[in-house]
Length: 401
Image (cartoon, rainbow, N blue to C red; front, side, top):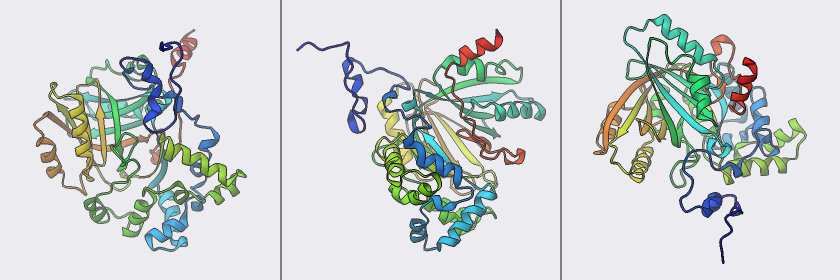
């Protein structure tokens, strides 16, 4: 029977068939952002449970399943409720969303910036504030004392929009030595939470290592051991029924408990396109992170690079694990300077014969956690401006006209 090349293969949601549409091509399409059939609009009914929780948890901790948390931590509901409210009001925690960007048609482009020797503090501060206030930069970091000065990221559909609208306005400043793109091939782990690109069934596993848990209470004075247990439990992998309190969400919104549960279950557990995370504001705690940026020899095959990333992701002390593509760099790894044995982790990385070079820097400031601003000193805590470069070139042209 002759193959019908005009009609795509039917899309089957979930499991190994989720990319079945590519079966009509001899070589599957290459690149980032080709899973759009799985998309859910951010204001879709299936997103209601997350959106209501995000809007209400600042005042009503019961939108989380406090019964499950009480059983898990052996604490009372009232104690957990009071501590969650205190930690939020002190800007120590924030509920954030990690969307699988490739599902939505975005490429996830991170980029490194190095400033020239002799750059003044005033020049760096000026550039830092530009990054802080540039809404399309969905996650951004400032570093010190190493091979890079900034590490920022954008979810973009069109690479030219990133180059012209986000990087173009400042890249030719005399103090800028270079800007290097590092597109994400696999987002494996962020803030100790395993993402959709983690190997096997590691998806949504939360990896606070024993070292980190043991030392965290000792190296800062804003969270005690009980607070830390609560944050750890809130991020624990479990069924969405144990994560959210759907009765409370129903009472707040007037929506059906069953519909709220079914929607978020589909997105988090079945489609795996959204990972909720209770983010710990490490800046407020006085922590810093060692960022290792690894370059492998060019003769290393792609499958071997993926294997190395998988092996490194088995080490819980690595808070963040990225695999890059089409870049000078291949792997990004983070570890907390104050709670882990950074020297031992460095030796582990350098122990791979495939490693050509390892660059390092200390992460000292974060601008946003995805699109949620973190600069509470300017009264912008948790302000979310979800930007997209959809029609950016068109709207830019209109403004000029």
